[in-house]
Length: 59
Ligand SMILES: [Zn+2]
Image (tube, rainbow, N blue to C red; front, side, top):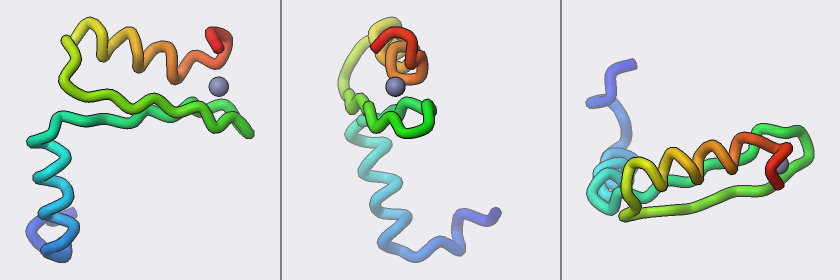
C-alpha cells in the first residue's frame, strides 16, 4: 500500500500518533473488550503492558 495516497487527514492522524507515542493494545480474546492505552512509557513497560493486554489469562 502506498501511504502517500492516504487522505491527508489520515496522514496527519498517523503523524500525531507517532509524535505522541501513544498506543492502544486490545485483547484479542473473542468477546473481551479489554484495551490498554499507554504513552510515554519505557520500552520494557510497554512490552509488559502489551503482554498483559494480549494475554487473556492475565486479566
Ligand atoms: Zn481479555
